Amino acid sequence: MRKSHTFSNIRTRLLIVYLALTFSLFNIDNFLKSQVYGHDFVPNESASFLSFANQLQAESELVQSNLDNDNLTLAKEHATRAIELLNSKDPINNVAWRDEIAERNQRVANELVTAISNLENITVSPEQQQSANLSIF
Image (cartoon, rainbow, N blue to C red; front, top):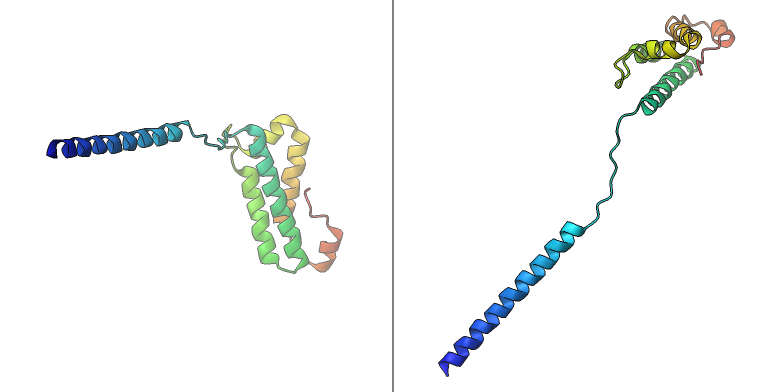
């Protein structure tokens, strides 16, 4: 009688091990077949230029906003950042944005440099603020 009880006990254990292995393999198989969604953003020249142009526009608008609020110190700080942006290098071509723009359109590059230099050289008096168009965009 003892042999049948032991045989049944071994059989039950084998069944449990078999089921455990089956379920673990099933879960591993599902894990390996699962879908993952994501993005891989590769730097591209158009996206970098658009980012540069938006940053430059934001700095220009901050200069104007700070002048409207009579905060010359902060206006000059944003104008300096705009100059730094213009002189910074395109991360893809490793060329200054100013030179990159000039390569395509020299007139636009000259006007942009002049406009940003004007922002940086601001000496504010209420009359000058009203008469000057300080926006570069």
